[in-house]
Image 1 (spheres, rainbow, N blue to C red):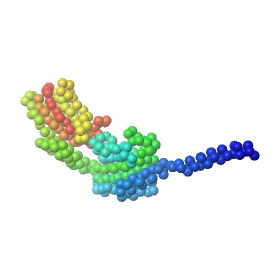
Image 2: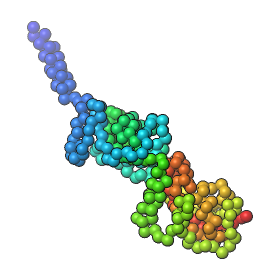
Image 3: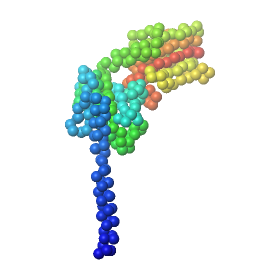
Image 4: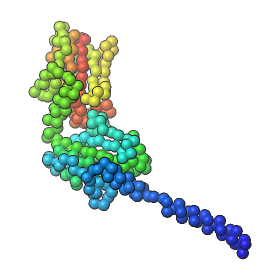
Length: 291
C-alpha cells in the first residue's frame, strides 16, 4: 500500500499540473478576438463584424464608381498597421501601398472579400481589422511579423478617374513642397525650365547625354546619373514624359519634369523601384546632343 501511494501521488500531482496549465492556455482565436475588440474599443472605432468571421469593417466612404469584380484589375491605395504598432506601412508612394492587379489575387483574403462584398464599388474607402489567423498567420509575411492582427484601409480607385486623381496628387506635391513656376501641358506633364540651353536643338530622334535624378513623390530616389558619369540615351527609347519634355530645351539646358504615370511607367510601374501608377519627379541637365 505504501508503495502504491509512493507512485500514485506524484502521478496525480503531474496530472493536476497538466490540467492546470491546460486551463490557462488560450487559442490564437481567443487571443485574436480579445486583441481586436480591445483595439476597436480603445480607438473608438465604429465597426461591424463580417458574418461572424472575427473580421470587422467600416465603410469610410461609400463607393460611387462601377461595381468591382474579382476579375477586375483594380488600382488601389492600401495602408496597413499591426494592432500593437510594431509594423506600420502608410507611405502611399511605396510598392507596399500601391496595388494594380486582379482583385482576386490580393492577399490576405479578407481584403478582397471586403472590397467585393462590403464596399462593392470603386471610388470608395474601406477600413478592416483582420485577426492574425485570417491575415498572415503565425509566420507573417515579409516585414509583417507573425501572429499580427492588422488594421488595413483600402481606397479602391475608379479606373476612369485615375488621371484626375493623379493630377490632383501632383498639384498637392507641388503645393506641399513650395514648387512654383511649373507649366502643365495638355498631356498632363508638368515642367519648369531651369536653363534653356544654347547648343544644339533636341528632337525625339536625338541621342542625348545627360545627368539626372529621378524621384518618387515621397522623395525616394529610384534612378540617377551624376555629373561626371552622365548617361547616354536615344530619346525615342525613353518614357513619353522625357520625349515630350526634353525637346523644350537645348544642349546645355536643364529642366525639371513631373511626369504622371500615363507618361511614365503606366499603371503597372517598373518593379521593384517604381510602384504602380506612380508620378515621377526628374531633374535633368542635357550636357551633349548627338543628332
